[in-house]
Image (tube, rainbow, N blue to C red; front, top):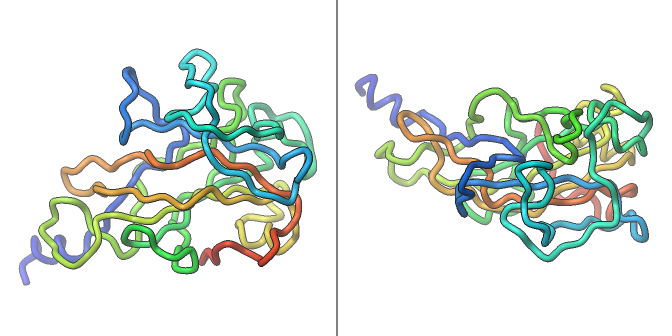
Length: 229
């Protein structure tokens, strides 16, 4: 096998983890803006997911793109360094987010695994409220290849879930450890990202991701997915 052939077979598809990938004009299927909220005031043990109906504002970075119909009674996570403990929602350093994914569209949650390099804390700037910091560079998705690689039988798409949790200042470095401890955690709805990047193909954003809320209790039925670390 030639070197070019080896690269074509083993290269992984990649995507960009950015919860505020905005441009002017906004383009469906390309741009995205989603937020993470604290637990619902009345039902803190229930996870909510879906974008709100407020149109995205480039000035305040509020609102979602695309818009939806969900409402949240919790507050946005992060946006400052104020607050301690699992209910200090404003302290972005005390909360983390990451991705779990699997090759192909609409894969079962149990098959999604941790995407290496995706763990980041939340933003601490005022205009960054509700957003997760962006990892540096595109993230390879295990088991995938990139569009235009010429490899058949290997998905160029991925099933993805965004998850977030209270990290306790490093006490809970992973979603799994936070979930086991019963501190606030949450997972967004699963979505597909098609046309993964690689080679000369630009990696896509998480254009189908949606806002979601954390919960203060372990949901009935246990963990929605079992991320590997």
